[in-house]
Image (tube, rainbow, N blue to C red; front, top):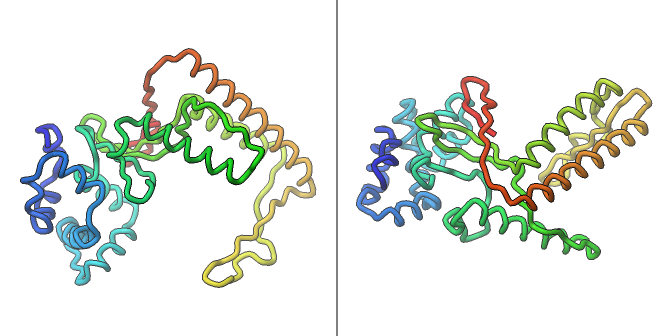
Length: 263
């Protein structure tokens, strides 16, 4: 654990981990990282129980109940919780945490770079597409990050991040602009269908339809043409920038207080 990383640790987190796993602070950096990305269930339950008391003086008798309570924190407290635990569950001096799922037995430590993670995920998705569609030919990897969630410290500021390739960022902006224009041209809304909310086994059925005042067919056609255009632009941009082979990272501040967010 480097000195810069250690400064990220709040006294609250240090005290909590001293109660749950005191030997942690004597481990090597590699051992601490492996522990942080895959905290044993029993340790995590006790950690939640301890942090709830440390942060808000909430005494939860059952460690399992403490985990449920942590998941149900109101938004402002959830932000505080995420900031406190990040130095334990992260990697690197900036406490980078990729808020995505991994295959069984894998973690972010399996990937030396974000590029390695993205390409591996792309190959996995391509294989799934081939299984679903025998005619699917697949494509060349040109970067595929699109609205992936992460957390980190930018300087001293705890920050949420949404990671996309440049082409993905532009695609998202195009789709948002197109959605607003379509809504202006053909106002519409989703209304419950006759089966919406019905219980089927342990699930609730989702049954909603678009109401466009009788212009549903026109709305479908407009949305389809818009989708075709935006995704053509997306594919063209991916290919164009892949051929140029230029590297770089853009940080765009999209914060809405009290959260700090970048894209």
